[in-house]
Image (cartoon, rainbow, N blue to C red; front, side, top):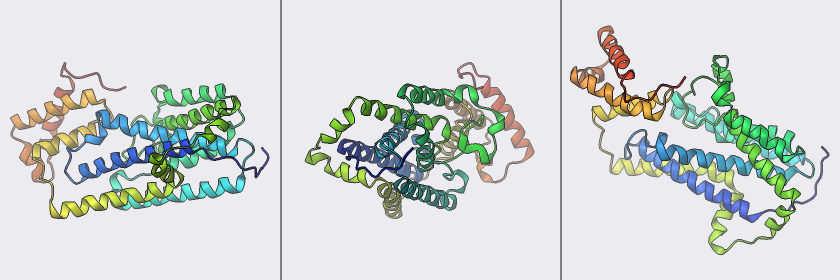
Length: 323
């Protein structure tokens, strides 16, 4: 593709959409912060509607990233601008990885949304001139790929970014190539189709009302907002926690939370909730709960836990485990 410097009009409604996505992301992160400090039940943001909410937010950012890539480079790749933006996003992704490695080393962000946007923008260049139907077909393949391409071959830390390991690794934000690059391609296919129909030029003529100007401003500076909002939110919750700390959860609540988080790494939510309830009931019946929190477990305790786990896994109320 040739390099061009032709000016492409900015589409305000895309900036507004990006700003609204940022607000949704901030609301999710604020709830995560409340959970982290004990004001919300542990595991809340990892299950049910909150989990779907997080996936919808990530999908919207990646779709907008794909659409923006088309708007910026469909007439010819503006290499200087592309590499400048790529370097900024990649540097921000690296900063997120380093910060979370020291803050939460057992679940640090090694390939999150910014990592995906950086890689997706680079790989997306190859799809800018392809027919939208081909791009959309590849997108669908990527989105459904995990159901049939997972393999132990990909179960190595250096390959986790691909997203095809049998079990997802622990991370506070995991947005691997498969299936999430598919959403970038959906954005590319959609905007390419709109351009072909002459609709993107019409979209650029739409002016937003006063109510949308804060969203438009945030959307135009989305990277800065992304980097600054979470330290600010978690700092505010931390200050609040110093004055009005959350009540400490009971041992039963701590066990259920830890059990469901660990179980969700390999099983479905409909399996984990009754399974962990069964485990707690078995442990309570054996009067073992306090012993588990007293210190390191011994062989006898571990053996009893394995028996409980086997028994609870075979309960009729449980959904069949994932393959």
